[in-house]
Length: 572
Image 1 (cartoon, rainbow, N blue to C red):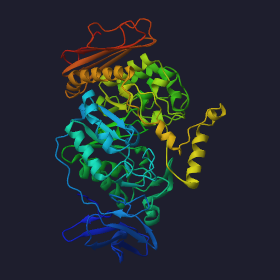
Image 2 (image 1 turned 90 degrees about the vertical axis):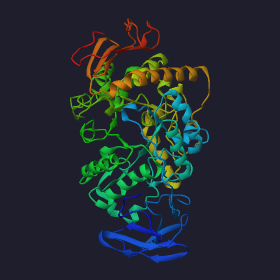
Image 3 (image 1 turned 180 degrees about the vertical axis):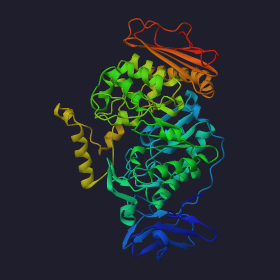
C-alpha cells in the first residue's frame, strides 16, 4: 500500500521490513520483542532490517544511543515519544467518489465538534449534515500531536491518528459512514513544518530540515532531498489509500519552498490523481497565484472573499484586513467577478504586490468561506461572525456563499447560527507551555491593556468553551432551514451549470451596498442581487431563492436563467 522507500514498516510474506532514513547516524537498532536488533546501513543513509514480527507488536528505534518512535509510525502505544505499534489494516471499501463540482465542504475539528470529541461521536452526526445538503466534511489535522488538546497543526507524527480522537478503526468507520451518506472526507495535512515537541526527526534525520530557512511555526523542511519528498508523498498516499479518504487540504503551501519544492508539488498531484476513484487536492496558499491550479490542483482557499465580507460587515481594518478597508463592497464584487481580489495590483497600505491574474480559472478552483478555523480561532476571543455583525447581513452573505458558483466551505456550527467562540488551545507542559501562554498574550497585548484577558490556551476550559452546543432552539432551526434551502437550490440549479464549462461573468456595483452579478454557463445562467445596507435593494423579480425580505436593507435574491449562448448577456 505504501510507495515509500525510506520510511515506515512494510509487511512482506515472512514478516516486516523496518526502515529509517538516518544518514548521519553511526548505529541504529530496532528495539522489539524485548530484543535490540542491529539494523544495516544501506545506500543514501537508509537503515533497514527484516524481522518476523506480528501486528500489534510495539517497537522503537535506538539512534546513536537515543531511543525514539518511528517518525512514520502508523499508530502509537501512547504519546508522541512512546513506542510505535505495527498496524496491519484491511483495505477500505470501494465507493465511486464524487465530482469536485459537487463539493459543499463542512470544516470540523474532531475534538470540539461534539461534547465527546471523538471520531465515533462525529460519525453520529454525518447523516444530519448530509440531510442539510453538505457533500463533504473536512477534518482539521488528525495526525498525532503532544497531549490531548490542540488544533492539530503542531503535529509531529503525521501518519498516525491522534489517540484522543479514537483508533484507526474509528477513523475508518467514520469514512465508511460518510460514504454511505454520500459525503466525501477531506483531511487537512500539514507538510510545511513540525510541532515544537516530539519531532524526533531532528535527532535521527537532521538533513530533513532546511538549516537556512524558518517558517513562522518552526524549522523549514528540506524538499531538495528525495527522502524528504518520499516521506511526505508516502504520508499523503497513506491517508488516501489506507483509509479511503477522498482528498487533502494542504496547509500553507507557500511555506513548501526552496529547491525541490516545485517538483515535489507536481509529483504529488500526479500520484494523488492517479488513484481511483479520483482524489482531490486543495491548497492554502497566501500567494494568490494560479500555478498549482493550472498544474492540476483542484482548488485553493480564497481568503480574499472572506476578508471582503468580513470588513464589509464588521468595519474592522487592522492587520490583513487593511487593504480591504477602503471599499470592501467593491472588493466583494471583484471577488465574485474574478475569484481573487489581490492579483498583483497595488493595494494600500500593503507595501508589496501580492498575487497574479486568476480570472481565467473556473469558479470551482476557489474555495470560499465566511468563517474558518483560522479566521475565527486566530482572533483573541475566538469570536464568530454572528457575534460581530448584524445577523441579517450575516445571513445574506451566508446565502451568497452557498449559492454562488464557487466551492463553499462552512465552519462547524455556522449552519446552525452558532455563536459560541472557537478559541486557540493546546496541551503543552513546562517551559513550552509557559512560552505559548506568554506568546499568545503578547500577540494581543492591546486587548490585555484594555483589561480583557486573552484566554489561556493551555487551560482545558478554553477547549471546552470552543465545543459546539447542538441546542435545537429557534435560531438553530432558522439557520438550518436557510442552509437546507440554499443547498437544495445549489444542487438543483448551480451544480449542473458548473459541470457544463467556463462561464462568462458580469458583475456591477449599482449603489453603496448593492451588487448585481450574472454568470452565463453553456448550460444556462445564474443572476443575483445582494444588498448590504442598501436603502433600495432592488431585488430580482420572480427569484428562485432569497434571504431576507424584499425591502430589507440586507438581502439576497437569486434567479436561475435558461440556457443561452455565452455571448448573450442577461439584462438583470
